[in-house]
Length: 67
Image (cartoon, rainbow, N blue to C red; front, top):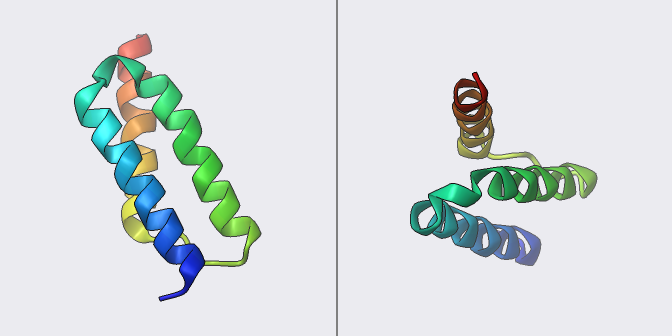
């Protein structure tokens, strides 16, 4: 596992913790998650499936919330 992957894992673990502790800030967390995924892609690293699922889940939850 590369150093970049470890850093991303730590950042994403922090985002997950924030989602649990501050559910009202889901929009902000979604933005930050997308930024992290974009950074992963920009470095040519594969985006883990669980992040793709989390992104889709947030999109779905926020779409339902907006209706």
